[in-house]
Image 1: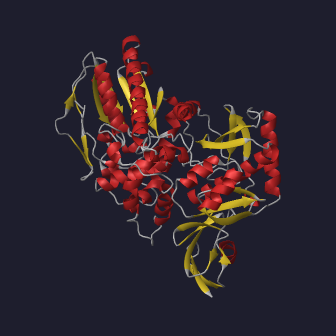
Image 2: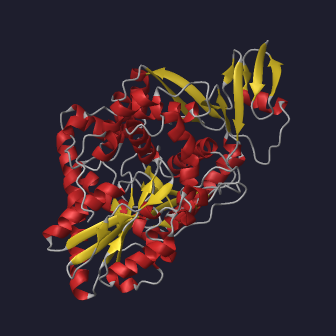
Image 3: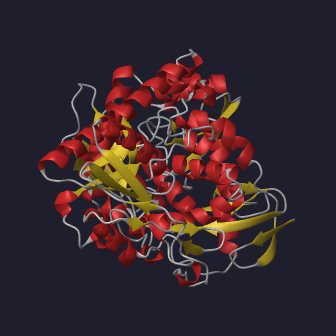
Amino acid sequence: MIRIFCKNTGTFKEFNEGVTLAEVADSFDFPKPYPIISAFVNNVSEGLKYRVYGRKDVQFLDYTTYSGRSVYSRSLCFVLSKAVRDLFPGAHISMKRPISKGYYCTLTKADGSSASTDDISAIQARMAEIIAADRPFRRQEASLDEAVEMFRRHGYEDKVKLLQTSGQVYITYYTLDGEPDYFYDALVPSTGYLKIFALEPLEGGILLRIPDRHHPDRLAPKLSQPKTFQAFLESTRWNKIMGLSNVGDVNLACQKGLARELIQVSEALQEKKIVKMAEAIYDGYNTRGIRLVLITGPSSSGKSTVCRRLSIQLLACGLKPIFFSTDDYFVNRVETPKFPDGSYDFDNFDTVDHDMLQKDILRLLAGEEVEIPHYNFVTGLREWNGRKIKMDDESILIVEGLHALNPDLTDHISDDIKYRIFINTITSISLDDHNCIPTSDNRLLRRILRDYNKGAFSARESIAQWPNVRRAEVQWIYPFQENADVLFNSAYLVEFAVLRSHAEQILSTVPKNCPEYSEASRLLKFLHYFTPVSDAEIPGTSLLKEFVGGGYNTSFKR
């Protein structure tokens, strides 16, 4: 007999060795408003078919958890792939990226045509049949050579490249009615778990819609994100020209010694975009009187570096950039909004003294000299240290911060003189055609590195804070993304390869006996798919240097 501690109930029970997590879940009585999808076993994510052979701590998860949603979405992608192969032999389906509260996919049939509306309806109907049949997902193991040969026979060259460059000896894959597929983490036990989904056309492809994170019994409301989608397409055009669709392609390029070239091109593409933004601002300055540039983006998107590089390009246009951060206008800590548990909500809009900030902007635009405060993060107090700025006729004021695009921050200032920039990290490649890279993983890794290198927080603390950071972004930042004049993508094609060597050591400091280990373990497993690239290849002016260290610290604040 083995003893299992259920974290959901805080109690122990004894079971026979080899019991599955699904059987264990049924034995413990705790509220289960939604089906249990997966579990953390000793703080590591596992599927419900996992068999327990020793004493373990187990926490059961449903769709309202990040891990549960990931398991559900991966499983649904397998069903979609299976339905396509059933209906359209020789077709190629690729799950590109999460967008609009779903997953954007492309389908190319054997004759080269894309999916019609009728095709999409047929695929949805076939998926519903597979789900109604409650077919099991079967977990298999094979040597790397066996797996490569099997996936090559099935025409999955994307998986062949990924596995061949991953350095693994044995791999785990899944089958559904004999059809093999590879996923880098667990699936649900069977297709019957996947009742909530829908397919619909989107921009020449297919949107796979998934359940709402707060109400898993219904679909997530679809978001219209045309600018975000165009930014994604812009990021993939060069990849397509170079033949770099997935991580396996990038790994092979790096192993051939092309990492420096890929980095140089990525830097050139970003600088080209920054130049275009500077020219647009300069044109707007001359034609409609642009005087205020507002820059925002989620945590660790690279706002500070983009501000510096944009300032250089504005100087080259003959303008005089002056910038400060909304962080300078934080209220004193005792006035900071709090969560229900009493902890500080540092990302809340009311963390910023927006009344004072807007008054100072209006004074600057009127030609007055203004003393800009400085927020002391150690004392939690706003201070005035004699930093005064004043605009003249050639000046452009740049305001950067999490809430810079919130209309309430500058509602007394004419939109005609504003230029809005939203910075995001839109990863343009996937692990393989059926495994999207989570949209926020590069930002989380960036934040962990930056916090650790600055001595601000340990990896464990950064991971613990991340759920609140993400919730704040959804509430306070992303709603204004589509209002931007331009979306800037700060992601790099080889970013994970560069971050790997830094992040592995830092993530290994997270203790195995804490809840944050589950995320650290997932990130470590994920990073192993990337051929490491030295940050010596990264130029000092690169946005990535903001996170790995060693970059320049030029300031254009005046």
